[in-house]
Length: 525
Image 1 (spheres, rainbow, N blue to C red):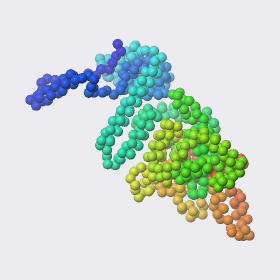
Image 2 (cartoon, one colour):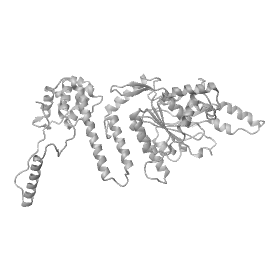
Image 3 (spheres, rainbow, N blue to C red):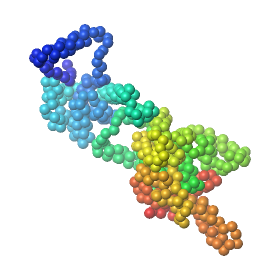
Image 4 (spheres, rainbow, N blue to C red):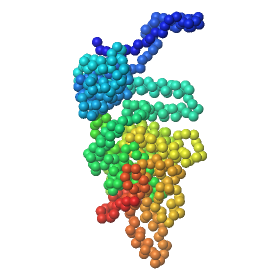
């Protein structure tokens, strides 16, 4: 018979020390007798879902044949075991196997507390019994799935109990909507990762993730560690958009920050190629699924921009209907192609960070998600009470965006306005200190990009008199900067800062790599 874990209870006892305690003792005995004689169909105690026998069978299979570990290690972790001793055995066995050594009762027992007892057995005897009564490793994955599913059920019970307890006794500063959002977050984490709280991660796991990322970059088109923006000169300096990064894209009105964000979002979605993972789920091999929060423009306006960029038909002509039959045919063909692109737009104005996070989680569960774009930070609201302190609210928003990127493991491109002090300077090139309303934007961002088009300012400084001696000088400068834009990498945790030179076609709102390869495309700061 398989060994089962035994809990022994020591009875305390001689006689009660006084009459009162004797009466209490009799009352407890009466209650116990009533429970014992009650209807067994009405349980008075429910144990958390677990299957100790399945845990024992899996551990026994691993101890006999270490190959069984690799059948479950991609989804099963030590915390999924119900019995603490089994968690420790699985963790130690995994460490030994990953080091290329053999995990068996002899090599494992030295890493476990020698004074622990399992019923009448020592730990060493218990390990030997597990190995002696092991079943075939053919069933190892089935046992692992059973353990994993029961762990999820226990986690669901914990979340459910917390929901009930908090709802009964909610603190004043926690309205029901906040509890709903927190519960949705915990359920999302459980659904995505099989966990419901944070914790320390071993350095060995972190190293494995880093190697996996390097391998993915080696196999991906362009050899990028992140998601390609579709603009090669920008990818070359950033390595693509890195997962969990908060990328702030800022600029003054008219610089084209929304156009650049739209270009990048469409490029990522249009390049989407999926592949099947080992667990049957789908993931992006190239490109990705994009969620776009358009707080400033409607979805129709955003679609018009993208269509204009793709068809090279001016967006102003599309709005006025000033197009030819050939142009219309191009628009129809483009729209048919765009229907297959995984780009999802949310045009809710004034959305809060909590609502944005909840909708992003839902999109990832339903459609997948590889990149988020928020246009723009200053149009969002915080999740707390309304406050006159806009700086604190912006801090809450940027902190929430950074946390959401890590939770969903996707890059978030958040657009931001710049303060008007840029216009009062002779040098209009933006700086980090120009980020509007809060230093937290600079602090929380992993990457800060500024869009700067000198053409915009030079065009506005055109001398009124064509015969003015300065007109020729202005004309030469305008020809030099016309159709170009600078993307200034002002901050980057993973690489150098500098300026990337791009081409900009204002009539199509399109950014692209410069056609002339001899032009210096990058200036490092």
